[in-house]
Length: 488
Image (cartoon, rainbow, N blue to C red; front, side):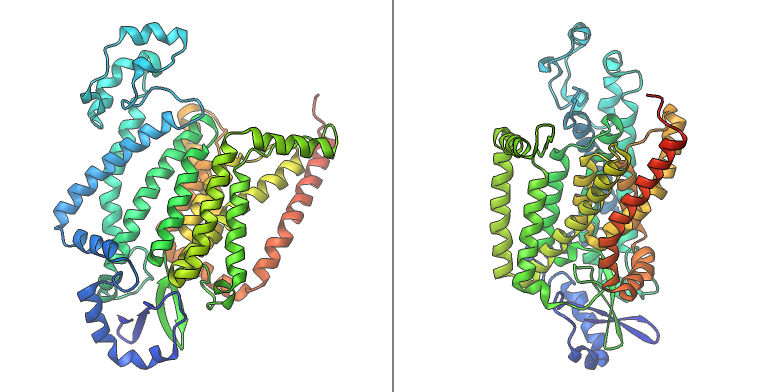
């Protein structure tokens, strides 16, 4: 599809994605206006997106702006309430803070049992967002004087952010700069879909951030469902991914940033090698989630024996095996039945591999070089989920932008509680939000060109950099210990 963008250019919306743009598109420049009229009548998603999803976006866009704003504000409050329920209940050390749990049946410590029995029972009014937290101030003796302030701020913040975010998305925040209003209008249903996906993703990131603040860990019960959901949505429609600039036959275009972007579509992705790659990524991810404790104190044979015994004994291993089998069958089925769905699924899987792989490698390298844990495995699963949502391209950008976001987080946290130690999960969450919000500036205008210029060099750098980083950190640690030995 060809759409006007400036007075002297035509921008192409590639509705044949993930197939490469054929030469015939170049001869259709004259017909751009009629194509635009088709886009207005039927919507961009209607071409290669399930009817129920395209119809849902069309029905949403048919609502008035006032109605949309009210609904989004209510959804923001609801999303905040969901996050406020997840934060204290899905963590490793849950507390009955959420009004949706029965405090009277919760196993409390003895010092809190008498306090709980003296408090009035919770009612349905305590479950009303914002108002309920004001009522629950009566439980401050159990949970801390200001425990109710953060939940209120989360719910009110999301109620304000979602309408503003929706307005920005539909105004072309994610699209390449300089596009005409006609192009923005043609992409409205795509941007609406991205908004709802990213709004749900935002609620998940808020929950992960504050769990990590509270406990210095991120539970798998949060990141595993988020990753699977991202893969499912990516399989349903390639428009679940951010817009990327493409150029074919001297025509500049916009297409979803799939696994092949910004390069041409390689036969590798549609071959059996691509299928085996997807199966391998899924298998490694499922294995990484298992209990993989490995002890070498009694030699390799004993270590392997304990390792496999631990896997068999852990009840979660059966769930992971079932997840691996079901996922593998789904991957093969999509590969055989839906080329477009396969490219969306591969995009999420490669994003999972690159996002989680970067943090996993850094964790292993730093752990070996400095003899201490640099990142928790929750950061690995969190980044895998992020990669499944925004692709491998966005994962790389998130990794490099996260330390910049971390500087701001450290300063804010230090001002609040005078604690300079901050978990890395919030860095990744804020870095992800920055990448998505400034997507066109950081990816289309800059990183995309870098990827095109580097080509295969990027792969070799990914292979060489981990051992180089490990060597540099080992040398640094050795010199530091010689100059400033540990007091122990």
